[in-house]
Image (tube, rainbow, N blue to C red; front, side):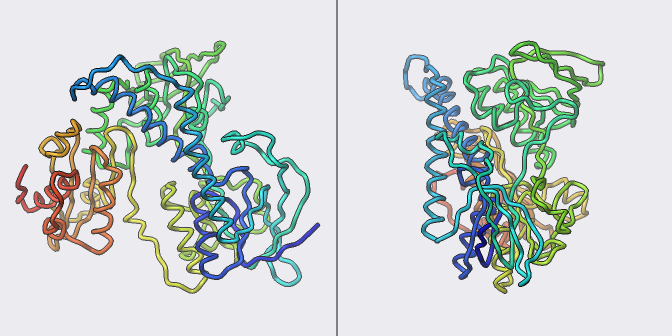
Length: 488
């Protein structure tokens, strides 16, 4: 059994792991990355963030051509959906990006190892041992490679003083209702349906369920979202979530809130979903059930508990401020540790983790990590919500500006939604910004930037914004904090 020595071993090549590896090389470390998939990029790139956004954009264009071209004076025959071509475009987007990460590995001389990694104890010289069962070369091409489980060929031992665990998470199922990959599916399968379902039931009114529900609704499916809470997106600003809820209902998505799915009965290629919304047990038939009720950290099979790594009650790794676990030299980032399960959070932690190893005083500003819902209209937020400020007893002012009053939004015929700026009552420092509307995912970065420098509502109000643009809405909302908005 061969041994190889490195400064750092990273287990997992998702947005946390591969970013950590590249930053470590920049800091002078010799790095190996172990990934069980044939493709790099983790869940985010292969079956999450990227393919879902590719389909969201494609389905949005289809809906615009079908529903809005005539408003702009463009006459076309009713558009026809070529789902195979849409899926091929999605796969091409994913492949180009995974190839790009592979190029970055080669450029940075990162040792890429395809296989299953297991933590072992220290060797005689005090180096951490990672045993890797190497995977067989894939016999298929395309995105299917990402779904292959390694086949045992041979084993190598990697040695390093430091190891980062960045294996990400997997979809959680409903109690007693296992995934079958065909009718009861996770987001992975819902990104690759071979035809538009007649009726898609989405279990869960969070980011993933609403985004994928939006895709298939635009493409013609009947979509019903079942959420056990009385509202969707419980962590979003309440006004923003309510506005998005009304918009999605206008688009034809049906919602059953305060509803718990109690069972799913397969009948051939279809299913009967049993649910309870407070009025007794009911049933509805459908083609697919997308379960999007959350995710859980992937820690099994890594040997963590065998070497003494402590996990919390939710299965996450307990780490200190430097992301080091209870075992010296073993670190964890991303979905494996506390905090939102977001790709950009994992990347920030990857950088901070290796910079701490190098003696740099790096921190992650968790309170300034933006969250985005990529429906249409989009929703985004950074900082505290009004509900959180009230609960904490923080005095604040609120400024709001509706996209309906914005010239650029009118030109785009995208007038739903608003920007809301929350500022401290005494020092005007911005405490939170929440947006529902066109390109909210892009607009939120201005708010996060100003907030990271401790900026005030007045600071944004004094910045000259180009006209006509969507970011003008942020300035107007900031002006409205002091009731000085011009176009409100």
